[in-house]
Length: 159
Length: 159
Picture (spheres, rainbow over the protein chains, first blue to last red):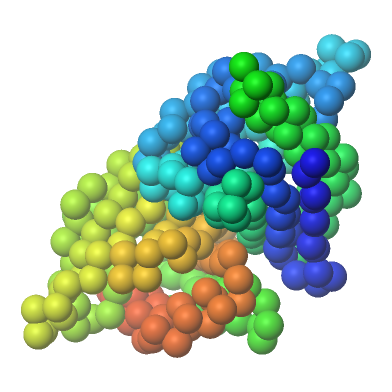
């Protein structure tokens, strides 16, 4: 079972998400960097994800689309800062529906016995940008994603 | 004359720097993206700058060193998010002497008559990171840089 905590202090341009998974960091890391695994968990459950590029290297670009049941498509893109590793995946993030509102996401994977604690800090350039992200339904997306990731990790370990 | 304002609200992981220059946005933009110009103004006056790479494109990497009069060298690197333009230069920034403390810098150039207002917002993943940047002597670096950039722009317009 994953336990997701979302912290968004009022008046601060930060969001911190922590959750832990019943899987080793190496496997969780694979789920973050292999696009054929990413599409199986990232985003709300009722959206379909398509990856245009996912270049896991310093300066590598990523871009993906989420499509809802009405056929509406939402694009996102960013770049990786530094070579992604379980110690840190650092990337920029921009929703193309709100261009110019970029945030910086730092994800760390920490081994806790046979579990992995995943912590993502999103840093925004203003409190308004942070609040807009929260208002966009971020929480549903995060909770769905975490449940789906837990299910994927379970399938990978069973398989 | 450049007038630099540095805003760093207590307890917030942001720094905002605004200054204006007696030059059009196109020329100020060149000073930001052409490495042979960047080395003439970026950083404190008593340091020498060497650019290792400066790839001005979406996902492009940049890395440079500042060397002081004692021969001590300080490296910095980051990546560009999106294609840099006068509307916005978005990039990550990391001092290699403090690895893992990455910030996101967004610089916009706005035409004000025959002047350009330059605004840079630096977003950090924690207040501690922001305060460490301020404590590292950021203000001297910013003020020296802005004076040197004003001088460079003046030379470019005279020449």
